[in-house]
Image: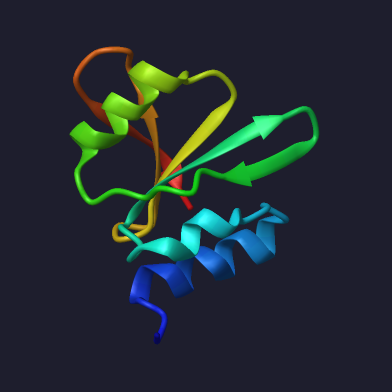
Length: 93
């Protein structure tokens, strides 16, 4: 199966930033919103990616938001969760 546009962009970003990509990432088509979790000095992409910010917020609410980075690869920006119902721009990726 050929790579989707965002799968390729995310892979390139992860390669450049030394982020581990889990095998589950390849199980479905990649969305433009991705979460990278930090654990000590290691960074790992969350296998699921999303197309709606509400889904990202749901993930952060249910599975934790400590030590993570949220990227919007469609807009080329890093987002931050305000703890409520929205994501705001932190900086360009």
